[in-house]
Structure formats: structure tokens, C-alpha cells
Length: 466
Image (cartoon, one colour):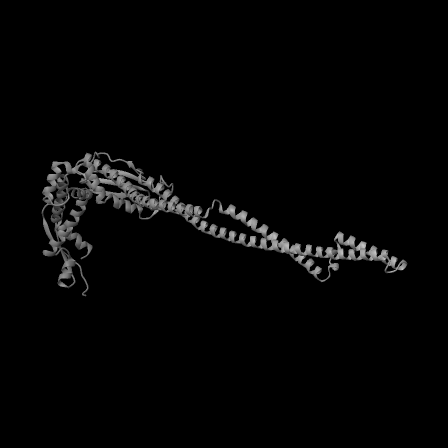
């Protein structure tokens, strides 16, 4: 079938096409006029995704996620929000609403959930493509009711948004409250252990006592070194006096010994002089010799006394060294004990500090979550509240007529082609050629003049045989 044949078929079946087109358009007009009018009210909401949390002062990270807008749309169209709308509009308190519910469900089910699903069927939520604005539209037969439902959905969505943020914070605050109580008990127990240990050990300031005792230990160490030096020196001097006391510098430096030695020298000189002048039995010689013996005896006594003095000094230094050594050992033990006490007290002090830090962190977090749990602010604001529309949104008569014109044309053409297929007629010479599968040699045309005279003419068209 070529285009010429198609046009001939349309021309032949024009009545069917025209009737189908007229019926379709007429039906669309009648149905559009008979359908109840529906009004759509729209509320615009803006989501402040760049807002700051009023408690923490931080940007809300959840609002920066790609699926944030889709999540908010799902929240708006949830049954939870719809049931809040039902409660705020008090549908369940109306006798007519109860009768409608009983008639539809025979009293089976939850009336709040049934009305919520009914409202969601006429709800339409659309996000803006390039902004953070969401439009909530509700369609109904009453314009005032449609506006009220749209505004109530916006209000219920704001309440739900606050609830979704507040409930986790409240639960966290309860948990943190219990943890804070436990951490406070741990801190009190650690402080009690530290105080008991300090009382048992008699510690006031471990670091101060340790500094004093360490200084005393250093002083004793210095004294011990000095005593050891003195003991070594006294011992060396004592050892020199054991062989020959005269060779000892300490004995030689003794003034008594020195005087006696001088007197002995003088006495020996006197005795030598007398031996030349008098005999050995002379009284003067005997007296001088007795005086010399007495001086030598005194020298031996003084030398022995000086030697004993040096030995006593060495013994005193040795005893002093022993005492200092014992005091140093006791001081070392005391310092070691203080170090041990300091380490144990440091451990308990760290336990107290750790418990204090944990309590401070939990208390700070508890304060923050408590504030978050009491926040009644939301980052969702109503941009344009819904108002009662003046014009109905459906049915759209002009749009329905245009669609019926297109549909009626398509149906008319379809019915015309079906009628032609059911009752095939010869419309052109191409139909004869296709039907008989032979070429057309001539076309006889019927020419009729305006006055009604008819004549037959022959026009011959020759075709080559195929």
C-alpha cells in the first residue's frame, strides 16, 4: 500500500473516521464535564542544608549527603507523618469519618492508619531540581480542605524531623547519665584509695620529702668521701709511726718532742764538755748524765704519747667513716622507700587523673546531648504556605479535548483501515494490477458535464508486458 492508496482509503472511509472522531471528542468532553472537580494546594518548604547545629555549631553532615533530599521525601510520604496529620485534623473524632471507615473496612483495622493511607494517595511531593526546596501538594474536592491538609503535612514533617533528631539524643543522654554516675563512683573510689595510702604511709608531699631526703643522701655521700680521705690519711700516718716514731712527720712536728730533742742535744753537748774536764765519776758528770737519761726517757714517753694520739685519730676517723657509711645506707633505704612510695602514689594518682578525665569527657558529652535532646528547632522552614486554590486542577478540559482529538483521529484512521480490510474495494489501477498480477493496458474514464450530458471517451495507455 502506497500513500496514494492510503489517501483513497481515507477518502472512501471518511464517514467512519468522522463518526469515530466525533464520538471520541464528544465522550471526552462529556466525561470531563461530569468528573468532579479536584483542587490542588501546594506548600513550599526550604531545607537549610548549609545551616549550623544550634548546640555544637558544626555543619550538619547528613544534609550534605547525595540522598538527603530523597530521604526527606520518603519521610514526608511516610505513614508516621500521615498519622500525625490525621491526629492534628481530628479525623477519628468525626462520626462521618468513622462511618466511612466502617463502611469501607467493616470495622477491621486501625482507623488512623486507614485515613493516613487515604491521605497519602492524594499527596504529591516534588523536590526542586537545582535547589533545596520541596513542594508538598495535596488534591481534594474542597480547596480549603486541600490547603489545610498540605499545611498540616508540612507541620507534621517539621515535628517528625525534630523528633528524629531529638530521640537519639535523649537516649544517648540517658546512657551517658548512667555512665557518668559510674565514672563518678570510680573517681571517688580512686581518690579514697589514694587518700588511704597517703595516710598509711604518712605522706604529705612525696616530691618535697624526696627532694629533702635526696639532698641529705648527697650530703652524706660527700661526708663519706671526706671521711674516707681522712681515714686513709690517719691510717697512713699511724702506719708510719709503727716502725720508727722519729721518722713520723707528725711526731717530728710535735713541739714537745722538738723541745726535748733540743734539750737532749744541749745535754749531750754539756756531757761531752764535762767528760773532757772531769771524770766519769765526777758529780757534775753524773748529774749531767742523769739529766740526759731523763730527757731521753721523756722523749720516748712523748714520742709514744704522740704515736698513740695519731692512732686514736685514725680510730676516730675510722669510726666516723663507719657511722657515716651506716647513715648513708639507711638514707639510701629511706630514699628507695620514698621512690617506691612515689611510684605507687603516682600509679594511684594516674588512676585518679584518668577517672577525672573520663568523668569530664562524659559530663561534657552529657551536657551536649542533653541540650540536643531539648532542642525544639528545625532546619526546615515553610517558604510558601498553601492557600485555598481558586481554580480546579482537574479535570483539565482543554487538555482532555486536545488528547481526544489526537486519540479520535488515530482511532478513526484505525477503524477505517479495519473496515477496508474487511471489505476490500478497488480504489485505483494499482489495486487491479496487484489483484490480477497483470499490467494495466488502458484506463476508461467517465466524464460528465455540468448539464448532465454524458459521453464515453476512451483513453489508451500502453504498457509494456512485464
